[in-house]
Length: 72
Image 1 (cartoon, one colour):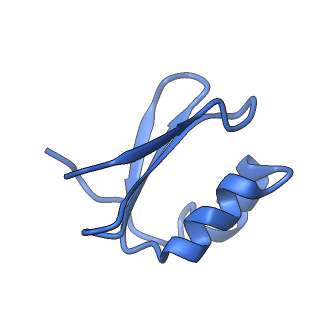
Image 2: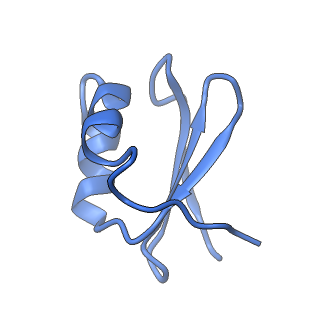
């Protein structure tokens, strides 16, 4: 997996990562827990990254709706 990371996204989300090949998005929260979701289209990842409130958008669109995956 070849992730591209964006750091210091917001107070609630420390980092966002995206793998173009597998369409997997990684989210690192302020408490350092990580969640990986797939499949995530790139425009959705970009909209979360550029949102004024990315944690709110993540909770509304991704959390509980797009499955989490395990990453090795």
